[in-house]
Image (cartoon, rainbow, N blue to C red; front, side, top):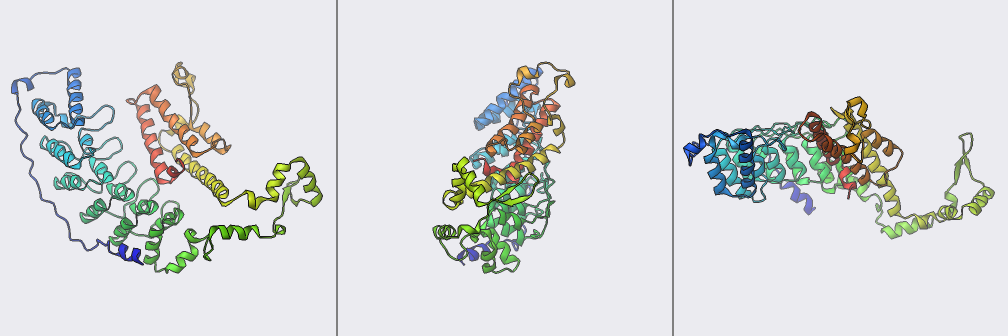
Length: 447
């Protein structure tokens, strides 16, 4: 097939080793005003200077940024940690939409000795953000400084390769592989490699690159699942074809066994298939009920006639099931069942995460020695309540479940702020939840 030929043309395993020129950092530009820089600033003044510098960076005013750095060189503005984001200014510039401008600013910050290997609260350097956003020029620049480790793992055990593979950044994945990224590192969330994330998202080209460069397609995660399992689960046809060709399976076998073509394996159109189902004799169905002793019994004709008189609408649904319940309804029912199952898994993971015990139950003011929590928090929520609602099928859809979980974190920040230990714990748990929403595929049920 054309598709198969295209995919086979993406191999990069024989790419020569990529070497970056070593750059010697130039001296820091001279100050504009030596006398002014010698002044002593109060803590409030220093904070204001830093806030002004951030504003200049966000406004992408290069000349002003240069003058500011020269004027306040002794303050080391490039390495000041922001109190809210827990990041330094390099994180601002690498997220500019214009990559050329981002490179110009990052080069400036590097001239003033910004710490390119700084890690934020998620243990991620700017390399993670660059790879996630697919900015190859920035990646090459950072690598040329010999200041970062491409196999650094964040608090989830994931490397920049994971984020590039998930978001289908082919150029980034190719470069990372060229410079020695470990394709077989596993994360701490589910013991999965980057291949799992690219397979789940249907990124066939990246799956090919990873496998050709030594990533083990047979690796099993903590639930004994392989990347191929997730490709099949989310019906990623191209990825399935890639795995099948790798494992020596024929395409015909794939078509016969895959859910992708299961409904029409004999070439029938959906309407014809549906009509065939309607032509099945009604005697093929048995109406059953559970008696008072817990035994399953078949409903007799007289019993059903009585039931039909009492509940005509329900009886009509049973009699005309093929006409009233179509494939869309059945698929919707399956979809509801699936998101609830995934949501329970996500909640279970969140429940066991470090610090989560603070959110297991409603806030006990007496226990924590406070008396104003419910005056400030008008819509309290906790994981235990979410668990009860989930088990009792009280959520109409996945969005309601998602909103309740997010409400727990919003309440935490509302009452505690983001600076103390509890606030930081809430932020970390929120990030864990959002990550699980991505990893488990729960996100697709939110739309």
